Image (cartoon, rainbow, N blue to C red):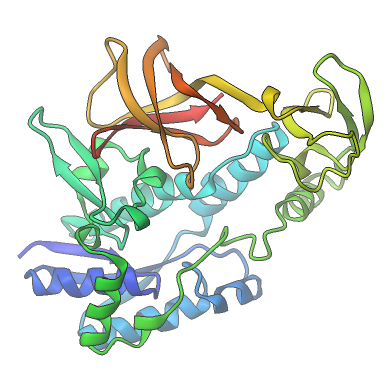
Length: 360
């Protein structure tokens, strides 16, 4: 019998994933990943986040109800290094990172998979809304979930072939309503638990204060303020510091220019935030590096693909080609707004993830 470690967040999706795999005959072990940094920092998780104290209690109860062994594994060090430090460093570089993508690749997969294999498991499993298939070319690829509304493939584009080969995603074949109904049918207490929102280690959504505190605790220094400038360098007024802004932002700038103003660029070396018009915020060309290919080994010629430039982007058609050893360039059919350095550019070939990278 194949042994599978299910990453259990205490939420309905991972709970039903564990149930479905047990029904399919797997030897299931439930694991919650302890990644929060301080015990009291996770009053956050009372709202149903994925990694706090309430998650442990909910997951433990579900495991008992399903009659599967359950453990809590400590991944604080990995989470600090690959997620929190990365998040802070990217913001200081003027980028807007997606910490969930880093967490998926390096913590929820790399760290959990290695530890699971070491205790004799054959696979790991999660409650993500995505499907994994082996293609005729032998490669493993993510396929969009059965329900587009919940599809989570965007945040998983960075998984490696080895990780995909060892991963099961039983929830991807169902809609959210079906998953909740299965949970109710088998009497799980988490059937109506709300989905977790926001970044788990910044519960109040105030990224800037979090980063300021991180920097202050390491260096004892405060972050500098700077100026809003036009693309040609004319100073428009002072700003609070680059970590308070993201490319494409329109609200909360505190500028009265007589026209809707957008953040076009962030320049960390001069602490300048470049401001322009809506038209200036549009572009057809998007470059990305730190590539990960999934359905293909590499891009050998230009290809028509459907691409997303952020998690809630509905996606758009473009032609992508390799423009460097670790660089791709997409030419979109229609201009795209708020192309944000640090976010992921994810490419789809039909229902399958072709690959992606980090926007430059």
